[in-house]
Image (cartoon, rainbow over all chains, first blue to last red; front, side):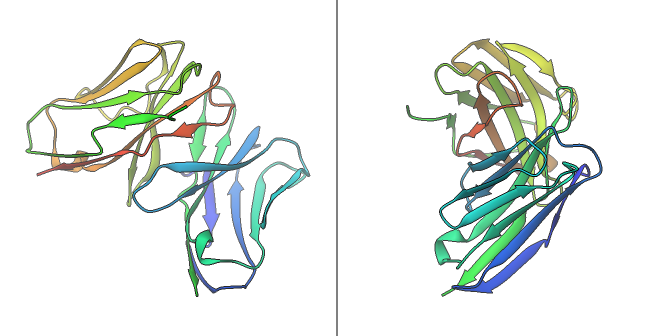
Length: 110
Length: 114
């Protein structure tokens, strides 16, 4: 989707390192969702953010939505091989429209 | 709950053949989405149903694609005739009331059109 951009496109990190993935929109986001996809599988919901400035954490993953509600970041602390996969942001951009970003492919080297 | 169930998991067919993909949403969910995922275009929403009624089919590529939801527990996506460029992974997802809620995805159907 061109409405959502993600950076970086791919990321290779050593186990134990921290990393951040960004999701940016040119439009106000009414809801921002982070999903993870493993190869050959469907998407698994991680977190949902709806309010400007909101931050949520689950285990070693933290997601934030900026005050203007146009950018979100996903931060993984002390990465593990189990964190490897494709991370996609999805967003409610108003009306009936829901779009996904192109995804960030994460590899974690043991 | 078993989650969203899609069948078949893999489909290989020849150009020109009809292909039918099936989806059983999570019981109690009243919204259903069909997506297509390719390396070039990423994850694209094809069509979205709410209470079995198609709400937005603007993502359906062309008339060769059609989707139905005859009841709350079953949906199909049909491609007739299929073309090699239709090769992709097709996902079905369901949610409680629309795209503003968490979507739960099936494992997908990997379609190869030769």
